[in-house]
Length: 82
Image 1 (cartoon, one colour):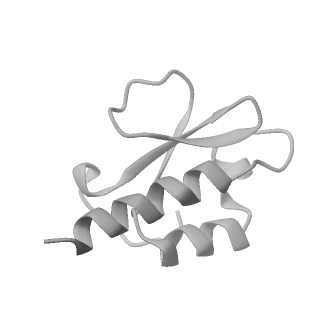
Image 2 (image 1 turned 180 degrees about the horizontal axis):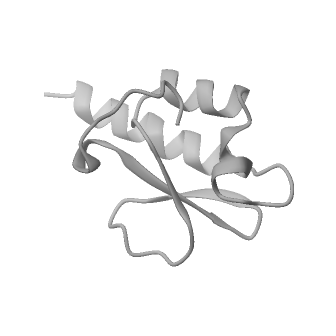
């Protein structure tokens, strides 16, 4: 969604909307419509700037992405640590 590049499903992070917030779905088991984004801050920022999450998840209004950003930052930090 963010950079619009294709990738394998295993390389992407699934996002779902729960109670007005974007929530990461690491296991892919949360109910509802999902959207996929690379687990990178650049892609996340592009998706937020383009207002892609409400459109892709068919949400009526803006969605809170704070928890999603923290999850992506944690994923990036884990990958950087050897």
